[in-house]
Image (tube, rainbow, N blue to C red; front, side):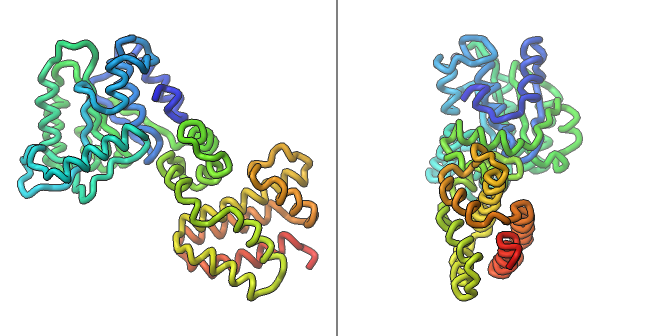
Length: 371
Ligand SMILES: [Zn+2]
């Protein structure tokens, strides 16, 4: 990664850069904002900059320090995240089973591979007081090596009271050169005393266009998938990647087949298609399918307006052109509204088959307003 590996968040990047240039980076910061906005990713990149042998705002990416931080295996970067609870709260890390330690390593590798993925230890109960105590010991220890130690406490709202109080001590008596970065999507769940001792940095939800561009560029998501996934992702890169990874549940070919069944007016055949879609039994996959159908109508609108270069579903270019030619009166905006209503219903847990039947009728009226 590098700064251009962080999607959007230009305001945050420039704020941190200013603080860095003036040597004013605080010893404790709270990155707060929605899930998947890049809070951990920014924290990791900042740790890399602070320890790069090149000493510039853009980490060189090739020195030993950069490489080790990229793998999240660097003595100057400590990761704290929620772990399974142990009978005794004070147990040290070596009391974890082999399997748990292997899983912790797997979590760290996954985060190194993709800093937008969440730490998700199975059976994690919260951030343990022992993890926070380790931080305290570490921050008291000044390393002779150049650079600045960073402790990233991911999803800091998952600290229980004991862990929060232990952290409070560290915040009250900062030692050494350690920088604490807490990240959270639930700032309201944190102790006010902790909030008041951290410089707060707000992360905004990412724009759909930034997410779509970013996941194509950084994660090789195919563009047509990226656009639909970004639309459903609520500003979260993590969510968009998960949706893009799951789209195969309903093949894109289904868009055309479904619309054909809608137009043909044969109820039995239409029901067969609807059942096939609903049988996937995955709300997200069906919602994503509908986002693609909406995107189809936006492309048809582009053709109607003579702007074929605006077609986003380039893999469906020919069928979209054919459809636009065949149904010159199609009311695209109305169709998109109907689909968005259907997506809302899916989110509200309305029965999938019912949603699709109602949507089919509405779409038929939009496609063939004169029948
Ligand atoms: Zn470097």
